[in-house]
View 1 (cartoon, one colour):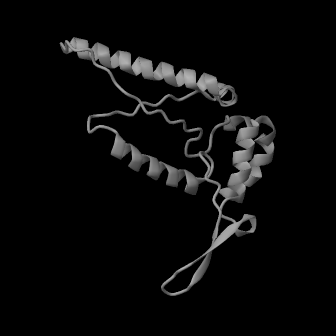
View 2 (cartoon, rainbow, N blue to C red):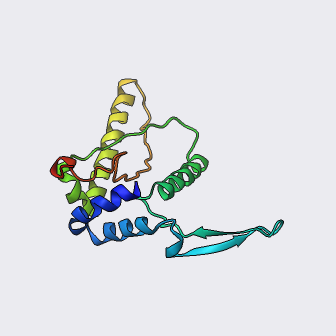
View 3 (cartoon, rainbow, N blue to C red):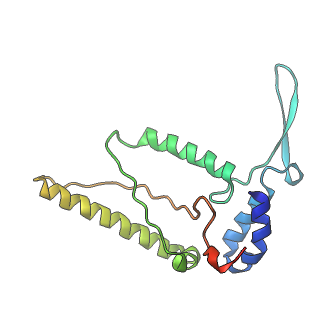
Length: 160
């Protein structure tokens, strides 16, 4: 994956924000000893090993993102109440993705609108079922910039 990314990166690096550029460049250095490491050793057997620094990325690096997802899931499991919950997904059309990436406030507004629409739907359903109490909900919102094929951009614009 890293090599495929390295090949395609020059085509798009000029049109992404500086924040995205920094994270992508950190991904390219993630896990490589030449960019920094720490030496760890076992106190019992005295064997030592070099461990490369990770980028701790939030969207590019599969190993760092997976680690974060597992840690976040464990945290949420410990803090969320034991009630039913549901996942809702807002998928943004390709033509609007770069606009949203470059304007974080717009993404926050879209997420708020989605949450309010879901809550409104649940209140309406509760009323239809005869609930007298005013139901309320909570939300945890995550942003995922890429799908399984890293399609932030419209791939039809960049023929292979």
